[in-house]
Length: 169
Image (tube, rainbow, N blue to C red; front, side, top):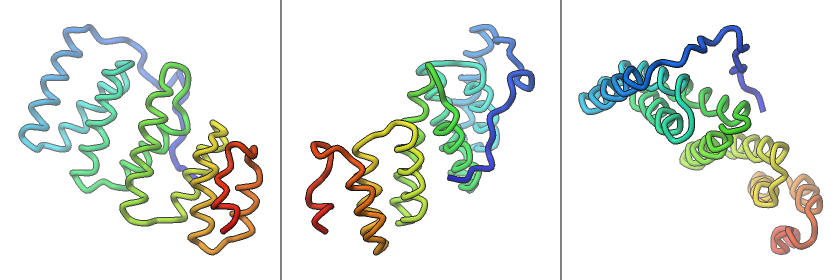
């Protein structure tokens, strides 16, 4: 899974936490920018909130950031941000990784990009060892006509996690 997005070193991130008043001010500016369809301003404000908040506020900022990028036509940048969230979210930020995976999966399914879907499931499988990801990867391999790869990925699962119909195919 190739991504040109790398996690920033801690020394490159401004770590001063803004006041709750500043956060509320920027949240208001974000709502205003979204209402007026000013996507560049929305991306700027949501990026600030994404970097300086945590939990549900950070997830909301991530959603606004990605939506702002997509609505302004910056699909490539949105995909890079989602990949970074998927690859580098740790600890309390794991909700971001699962949200980013869902968003990437929806984008790739919309365009029926089997290669990107296969890469997404492979990365997710390597991080979480999820039977659902292995079964999804097997399905993608079958759709691509890669029957040996499909068989290998299906047989790598424990028998109780394996979808029998995929092995038979």
